[in-house]
Length: 319
Image (tube, rainbow, N blue to C red; front, side, top):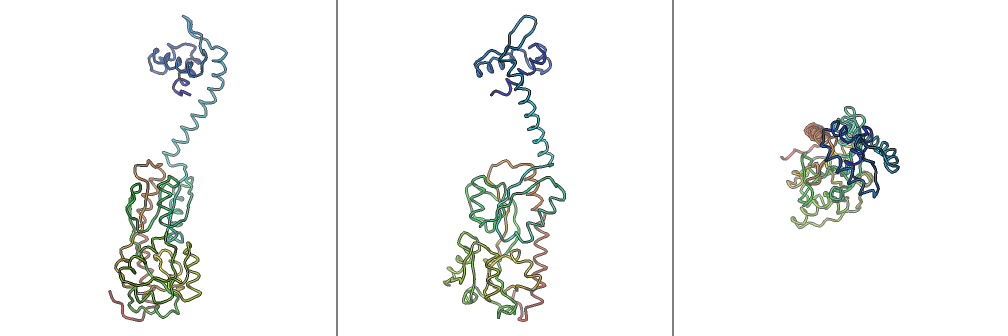
């Protein structure tokens, strides 16, 4: 239905005059008349009896008047909701994210944001990097957190946080002493990996291929949590950013390996979105808020890593 035509029809019905409706709406009477005529054509009925002293509603006009008032009220509610979104009073933000930041980083940022904007809600989907990019491409998520983002025709990144890929072992593992280790030697030890949709596995295999090393994980999974539990029980090496095992590291349950691998050191976490997509004000604000917290979490990672090295590493550290 032509909403402009309905709007002018309701005004004319209230005023019982096209001229008075024109004055109230600050629109030419001829324009109002054309809009109502178009509405009559669309509905295939006559809505107004036009007379020299004004207008009256036909039976069809009376029925449209009754329904139109309800429609007008609903439109006002829609406008009110949109105004609330602009004011950031409410809204839903759909986030797709890799698992590596779901232990501390993302829950803490959401908590801080909700303290400022308690009526903004979140829908979080945890997935691999490739799945997260696909969700953004299909408009199934508003923004995403992904590691090692590579070029995609429909996706762009707006902020980056330094998150190197690291290797971790249980405290009683031989490599927990901080001895310097190359990837080729590390992969001779029992290790676990996520499946190939994860950037972790793609990076490990890419570097191993350059070094002509075979990657043979004893266990593969699409859940980092499962891999961590398995590695702890079976003295296996786990590859993950520090945020993926942050609590385990600060509590001495896992220990960082002194892995010497430049390709792993340059890894980063990015905020991603679909190109040329207009996001809600709440989503834009949250993305900026998360970006502002990146430096804080980089500092926390550095503190946790240094404390673990000082506690567990007995070998000289090679930089």
